[in-house]
Amino acid sequence: MPFSDLAYAARAAFDHASGRLDKAAREVADAIKWGDWRPGRPTVLCLERALFAKDIAELKKRTDLNLPCIHVNAVKAPQEKWVGPFWRRQAWLWHDLNAHLPRTRDRLEAFGTAFLKAAGARHPIDAVAAANTDYWQDEAVRMGCRKLGIPFIVLSRESYGIGRGREFVSKNYKDGNFYFNGTGCAVASEVCRQFMLGQPAMRDAAISATGWPRYDAWRDYPVPPLSERRCITLMAYGDPIQVQYAAANFRDVLQVFAAAAERQAALPPAERLRFVIKMKKRNEDGYIRDIRPDIDELGIEIVADTPLPEIVTNSRVIIGFNTLAVLEGLLGSCAVVVPVWSDSERDPSASLLHPGNADDAGVCYFPRSMAELDALLKEAEAGQLAPKGTLEQRLARFSRHSLVEADTTASARFETFVRSLLAPGSGN
Image (tube, rainbow, N blue to C red; front, side, top):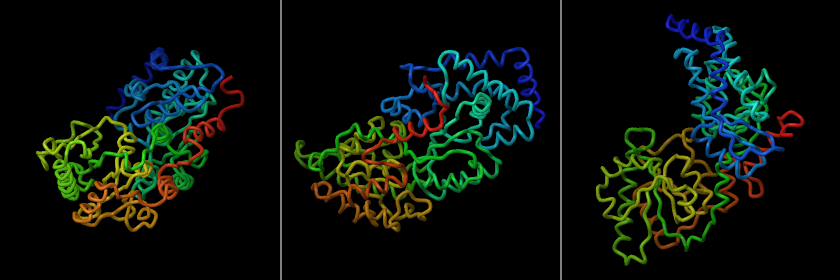
């Protein structure tokens, strides 16, 4: 143990003996947002974080579950007083507690147990849900769940659809000697389920492919015919700071996109299409304006907060590279274009969509040059670029990423999985 960690161990011992640990647990429980809690429904306490919040929002709309939330930072904050920085390692803490820090393990278990008991004093907790299997700050809650007989269930935010994701998780689990001491794990697709079934760390967990509930939001958006759509959309990806996102290719693509916008600017206003660049964050557009300082003069709109389904269902075509936003375009029945030249050419194992994959080539356009991309945009401007493949083919391809079925939501599948793991009589 690093010498500096003695202070953390001493603080944990003092807080445990003095009752401050229990007090901290009660204070965290007091921060739970119970929402519209209703009796007669199972209560699943969610350890909320950014992306998981999108899944929770859909689950609240589409399931018969109580889903109170506590942000993970609230659970993490008191533990940072008892666990030194050296030990705060994702996938490592379970082994480190058992091999090196048994007293800290017992105190974290006491914290997790006290937290769940305090929460349960308000309303019974039937299960706890988290966004990943191996966050270090969740370990105390996992141990508390096991002690109290409460299922700890993950709705995994990780995608294991391409090789680099699988390799990273496998290595992290192995290097950290990780063991998932929870109850079950819902994953996005059958590909993910098969991967998780092969992980020794998950040997005792129930694993189910449910899909991500966040994609159920698409069901709330009508899908108009292409003739009624007025947008040509580019999904931003070329930030030069992030080398993996094909900055050189993006510079070329932006030039073609801008030239198409310039063609539209020459038309009467009533006939012009909208040219839209979709970003994750509005204040990250500096590199785009560096490439084309005349973005505003061309009438190109840069948006960030507009929901992706709203943008895609109003687009004749979306253009992008190797991001989930582009893959999500398959749900919108528009043409999906993935430029492939220069630094956007990747090995299939590192690509969400790749021209060498027959399933991908059946549902996406893969232009190999600026001229080919420009030709596709001219077709889209004329309303003649149809989405590639059938709807069934596009949904099947998307389901390799996250399961989508016409007659069942991911939210419903997750609820079914949760209920299968609950103790008899839960929610009564």
